[in-house]
Length: 123
Image (cartoon, rainbow, N blue to C red; front, side, top):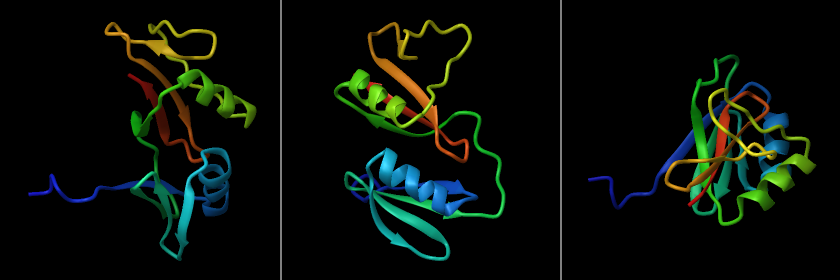
């Protein structure tokens, strides 16, 4: 039923201007619109709606993620923008904060300004 339909991703922000700068200037997403309810970005063909809310509690797990071809290059670019990678106890992460799963997939996590956990995955 929905397998052939386009997906829209959602996260929330309490500070739309700060979120707009992060998603556009740091992550490089294209802003499509900014209305009283949401910031809308094009994430390589997927619509990302960042809902403007008065308050919320970020999820304790990954909310959005990207598949990347060169995770080290992307991580280094984030670090240049003062983005800190998350580190988790019990997971061996390299000096950049990248974890290698048992099947060889590499993953890194970071937060947006509202505390939403975002991830990068290199297959």
